Image 1: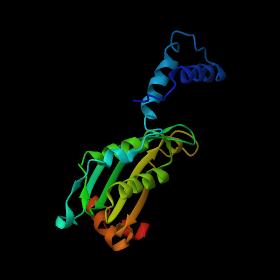
Image 2: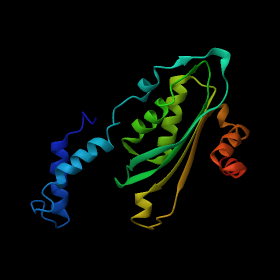
Image 3: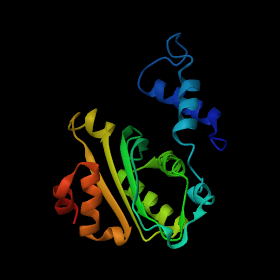
Image 4: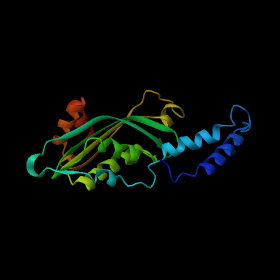
Length: 198
């Protein structure tokens, strides 16, 4: 995890940041903080430079035996906004209509996790998840719905702690609003989601 992360440089940067805000990085309270932040960043950004398609390589051929929807919902989502380096967290719901191959269900949360573990924006993250599945599995369609609260909205600026951002990314047949409506119904969004995101 985080093999390419330079913990020494991160710790030095955190020491400088603490000094810049007027704190003493050598105080007993803060002396271990630079190392802790470096370890945290190694975890938060472990997906930088990693290719999610490798997580989809172990797919299983199903041929014409399935065209049914596969939906993995309520995947825990945690990422860091690239604008303020503040966390955003929520849930990812990922659906696809298989082509000739399916993948083990645990691979989908792993794709979400890898792509989220880098400086991100929610809008791009959903598109990257959808594209990885589309490229890696050649499905008939993909739909990715992300719901997240953002530290940059909740803890600074407008300070809207209850605000929730919802983004939708689609590929193939699941780009059709009628097809999406069925997925939104399974997610509890009903027809209103289809109208809002058509």
